[in-house]
Image (cartoon, rainbow, N blue to C red; front, side, top):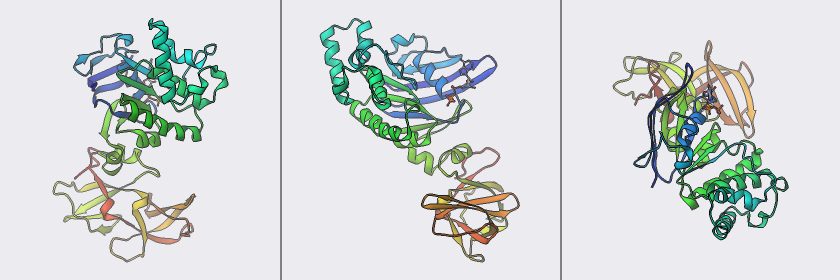
Length: 353
Ligand code: ATP
């Protein structure tokens, strides 16, 4: 059982503070994704957990054991990187078993372990091939095999699928998930790809600017974003975030009252969040219908996105069936689904509930 616990972890490169007193608990056996925009510190956090980079402050524990002073080789972790640099002159079996070879594991045992891993990864028929005789996906599986054969306590993976084409990435997502369910090894996986995070993870850790913004299941971070950053980051197309005003207990957007029961502690100015999928086209004059005019129309496969200007420089996007026609500057009204509204305090950015 290996929980990974990170306490008040900070890391600076010169004057650039990349991780800011970060706290995180990765429960044993879970597949946890670090998700966030480029430069938010995901790879740095992974490298600190691996021991490839020293922390500036704070501590890292695996279970009860403090590890932040230990060299990488003493942490019993295995890393899989984006560039999975296999040894070109060695065949697949030797590539997979090489880590055991340098540790002096006897040949027979090595062979047994390599064969076992190859079976799980469906590489058994390829053990005699050289890396250049493999497809991208097969090579990536060999890299995984190399990590798995050592039976580490923890897998650390840094964007391992980003060099693969879209179709293979989709297949490998499923495979990685399955391997994880089979092996049950605690896994920390870095990605900036929402789809990867949302489809593979038990828990998603959303980071921005060296700080954890929210930790939750994929469903939790989608359905109940803790703050404006998460609300705007998770979901495609992104959530509408529009200013709203509260007067005499009634909330309104661009002058249209919205009959929503507000929490007692709601401030007078709010940001209302609603996903384009949860905004319907309504008839002007109906209760809760916000009038406006069509700003932009975009066809995305079987759906159509209509961006509606409801006040100068204030727009709400609705996602409707592609069969719904709309032309720029048409008069139109939209109605947010009151069951799927999120409210945020603009002063703190936090969800109000
Ligand atoms: P990406 O998704 O682009 O890989 P990331 O979230 O993984 O981004 P990091 O690679 O952790 O981000 O980088 C965070 C910040 O730290 C960046 O501003 C980067 O320039 C800086 N940084 C990372 N490694 C070093 C280093 N060795 N020396 C100096 N600055 C570094």
